Image (cartoon, rainbow, N blue to C red; front, side, top):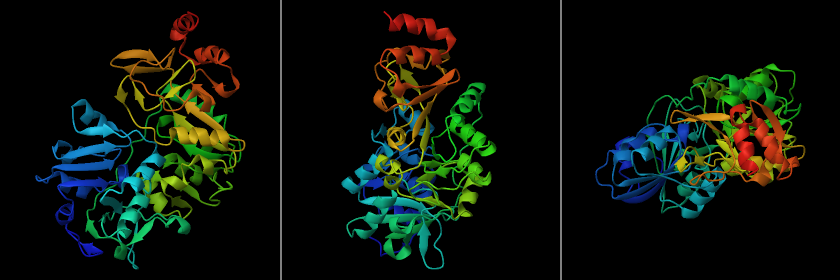
Length: 432
């Protein structure tokens, strides 16, 4: 069953357009069409529906529907909890750019999106999320055999894109159906920086020069680095980042952003935003912020064109060879590949570029304190970024450039970044 083009439907009516056996794609986090996903989960006739998404923002009813299987490209707290309880969630091993390529190749029959209300001319903005679902949504809208359904949310800000990349919008006349469902976008609680985080941020900030183009990952440490840069003496920064968080807003408000980058000059670019309600309001009021498809942001070939590109990301653990685990460790999926390796690779190849990986020297798991710098990874741990792409590693005990060190000298350098309580054990293991 296919609705007439651009038809306005009730949420339940639109959910009925999905067949009992179907494939569905929608965006991550604030780009998830909450009303449609809840209505889909309420159906009792689903037999084999595969939903491709990531960073689930609530424990949707569909997670308890035996006819639905969720393929998540990035785990968050909801996915971890559902997986731990034996629920129907699988991790889809692909980087963020690869998720877009996969959706374009598989051509799922249904693509859903959360959008702003139509403007006076009938244009819907994809708001704070372009990501890996933007281009697949436009392709589905143009294909008579497929469905593109928008969930209009009055709380979704209108955020522009670039004209030659679709302008981050779609016209009502191009889509199959649209529904209305209003609610506040998910806000990311401000992460409280621990003393270790503050020490790491102080060291990492010293690696950022005037005129750098910046990419920030998620978490308390990147946010603290952005805060320090916003308040510090350096500036003339550009912003080219996968995720726009509150730190980017603070840099703009501090007068630190000029966006003289060599690519997408004069505008701050990202592919999705996740932060406070104040961030979303600021984005709507700031024309210099643009949302682009993930392929126009995360591709390392583009990073090579950026001036002094600095990527700042986190990690779960690193071994003494310099291999980085940032998404899965000890058999448990914590997050996803995302843009981790892409930005590490791209920044390392950019003219004057720098890659910075930040992690505390210890982590508490199951009530036990463990070193995050290990002789070798345990079974069930996967490598997110290989050793030959890694440059700076920063813990609260220092910062080292691994790329300039051989396989033997980097062992001792990494041990010096470990917590003092574990250094002797690491040395004994390394020299055994």
